[in-house]
Length: 291
Length: 181
Image (cartoon, rainbow over all chains, first blue to last red):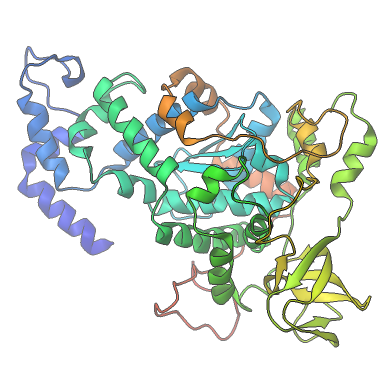
């Protein structure tokens, strides 16, 4: 990680002009205006900026801006559940979980989608969603903590960002931060493809296994029973992948049995000494936060 | 929440026995801890009823009627791998009504088979910045999360990340499960 940072700094120095453009979200030349507003005029400033970006890691600001675009697109497919108590609850629980990680200061935000299917999504930068259908089927707070912690794990390791930055990132990185969410056609086109890639086709299986490993530990750090996530996966083992409410989730994740067996091998005996707090019943939480 | 019979609420918290099969030979113990007395031995694919779970352990009733604790990872839902003839009752009916889904009506079950978010929904999705702004209003600070943990008696624990199999793992013989953050 540190070595990577050094390389990045070296590259940034070598490409001082490009790095400067990245810093300010686009090179503005006198009389040309913001790159997002330009028509077909050649945009040398952006090209220079993009040259720098092609060789350096996206900044956290860019990561967050991309996540906001992902989130706005997902919310275009399904709106938020109209239940402020449930929204407050997942944000509070989620923030507590996220604060146990190495990236506590991302703008962590959680949402319940008004969708009867069973799924959960993470975007770059810390925007995380669960569906109403998933929330309804959680048997304990520890299970929900396990699901949220798995999604938080994806954000920690930048799985979604890494999956999409290979293709076309350089074309939009300059506009991402400066443009308003949903306000730039080029960015929107990139985001649409990226959202389909990560949410409809799914991440690499190794990313899912890694998020499982992180998820059980994050839940345990937050004081929850770490077996909440395995219990969710076990329940999924009993569900039918052909069922329309589970179809997308099964399509984009490794088989629950394989995920459980990997966790089993790693968790064996290691978590027996933890308190195993199941949290409060969800129906109590919904009332508590519904006030 | 409003006007739903109270019985609905009890349905969700009532322990529901779920049939499961052992996925390996395992022991039924008197307590949910590995050094507890052994009550019975189960073979692979023995059927049990799962009564509840506590951490790494599930309380089960065996075919012979004995009740005790089995490692939860040693169990697989009996319905796994088979196609249920009918939609399984979902014990989350009460939650559905609390969430205001308006789908569960007066029954305590949510039927499966609801068409959830699909690829074509994502294909047809148009960005919705207004809804995103609404979402941002619900975000809370770290302090709010910490206050929640305190009043919920959630005690943070120092637990090291799990290394992938094959990767060198740190050994910590003193406190299993506890490692450097």
